[in-house]
Length: 151
Image 1 (cartoon, rainbow, N blue to C red):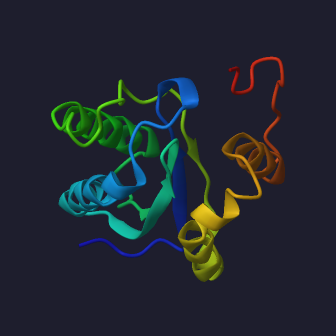
Image 2 (cartoon, rainbow, N blue to C red):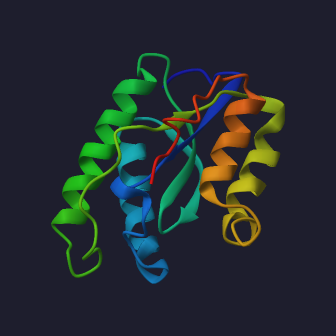
């Protein structure tokens, strides 16, 4: 086993074309699959949630697992899972290339967990596009609006 890091990383990724690719009633199947994948990779899943057009995960990786490798692996595995379960995910045609991974202090753990828990209520007021833009700006990431999440 590995020592806990003082920070954890919430991830966000979405399907191609930024439109709903799974029904709310089927998200539990996907989330259970993701939880199993994460457990198998010796990572810790603190919370998963989202909407039909994106997923948020609050995950702690072992120090030997790079963020980019984790995202490649989880997107590949869930892509195969969803495409082989077309009865549950008939509109899924793959994940978008991009993803967002942000590091937070361990002290913010409860705040992030609550944020992910409240996604469905949150997105009644704020779109995913606006949410991600606000997060990127909060972290000081320059965003070229000419290319940002083009429709």
